Length: 369
Length: 124
Image (tube, rainbow over all chains, first blue to last red; front, top):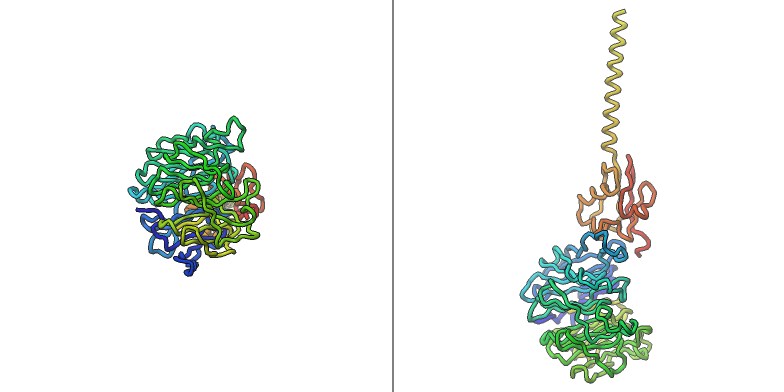
């Protein structure tokens, strides 16, 4: 079982609905919209569970809270299912951080050997697991109760949030999560115990004496190589990092072209040396360098990078690609990328050239295959 | 004279019965005081939110009566801590539920109260 087995369709989660696309297979075969759902509503994350073909869509309604819907394989309609819910907040807990679901930031399928298991990363920092396709959820208390969680803080949102969940294809009990801001945490026993695993990362936005503390790190996005799961790529707030040992140690990727600031990263599913990033100027100027959109790609493990621009706007472009705005299909060649200003591009040749799918989508939160 | 006494006694009995019936009716009417809950029709985009009549005498109990009819509705109005959602507003007889009342939902409902559950402009 490989991730994203179905590369014929892609889903785009936006500020104003969920859009399904038929994937273009070459430069002449344009991507086209198949259907739209939840029009007008913010869709923060979508998961295509290749194990059973079901789709999950997380909504964040402006007035009425976070909702979760599932569309089963072969069905045309969605069913509203349970959302992850935080347990009753004890009086002794920090009242500044309400135990209330703020956002489903990411959804991930469990391993091939645990059908029905779905993980959800949320704000204000809770990791949830469902064992029954989203009918009920449990907060992973050992991580929520981990010593030092009070050191986590908001990055992008007012409260901490889990945006990356990597389930090891070799062993479903090994799960790595990325938190903005709370560093990287790893469990090897299905969530019973957790270890902070951000050694090597550096947070230049912290006081010098705290810059290397793991729980203060802001990994914007972490992507795992499916064929070599110990290889992890991270676009961090302060640069780009890579681990070849499952997160035990992170090495900074230096001397990168264009910029080392950005949000998104995608890992080739089979080639551990290949990954894509989408650079922006800097924290304080979140636009493409020289207002020209570029994707950077390494094919030698981060030693060198190609700068890919063909087909991407190269003048007066102010598109920013968020954490979940870049994804690669299981063929390692089909890419989709969406921006906060509604730009959407696809590539059928690993990013060498890009097709403009749309320039007027709603703000794009996430893309997936 | 006996007839006058009997008539007076009968009148007192009738009055006593009348008084008793009035008391019972008054008690019944209190027990069955009807408050009406009206949900914003914006909710019908997502789930059923019919108008609900309830004998509840406190706001939270009134809402529970509506949730009994449609359990999905709870998550649209309250968060998982049982508090009124940040961007939902409730008026009871024209008075906005505010501050700690949004947590406790202990606002009394009286006979013929009208409760409006609306979306706050703050949420969008």
